Length: 140
Length: 165
Figure 1 (tube, each protein chain N blue to C red):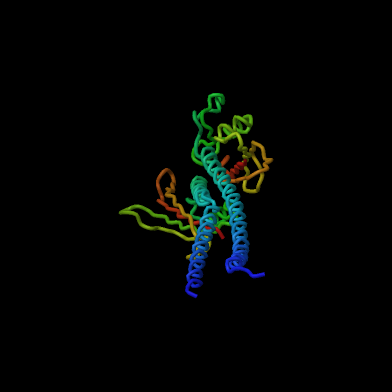
Figure 2 (figure 1 turned 90 degrees about the vertical axis):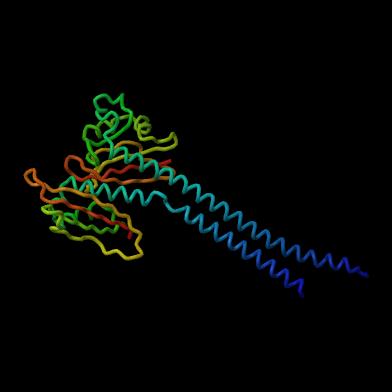
């Protein structure tokens, strides 16, 4: 009786150790299968979009409809995004003059990638606004 | 037919042994299968990661750098590093024309690809019309696509680079 009990404990212990080993290997190999570069690629694409929209003058236009349409046109449909634009003027320090937020609503569970860009808007060679654009992107 | 106690004990052990052997063989078969599937998957992941790393570096080179020397189009034989832009994300038409007219092996070498890797490159407008393209689009193995955004002649364009093994 006592011998049988001792053997059951041994078997139970062996099964527990084997199960832990299997689940650890399965978990680690599952993680290793994820792309290491997906986030980096998304980050580079966000930076590209910010640069392009700055250089085409769309940020300076302060037109939220135009900016919304442009970003929607550039990003693949699998991306959700949110853009916060802020326009400041400078007299006695920076003062927020205008701004808007466009794009999708994000939930707390979304794993987001974000980037921002500072820009200046000109008129007749003089600075009108100092602006910032903060773009957040996540996969649907 | 009087059997000794030791003979009976031996019979019992054989059943135990058979039972244990069957369980052991099942566990061994499971681990072997699991090992082959996992190592196969990991091998594919390693290959894909290597391709993605190459694609990121090559696309950065093309869209961020004017090349070395920056006026390499004047004498393409002196080119040390490829680059297709006049400034960040603004494509230079002359550089695009020169790059797409280079032979495949030279382009591949300039992109930093290994002998086993191939590429296909194109630039298209937002309606999907291809403006420039070069490389070989017929791939058999693993393929990685990277899309970057730039400006060509004042218009927004997509640069797509396909790297494969």
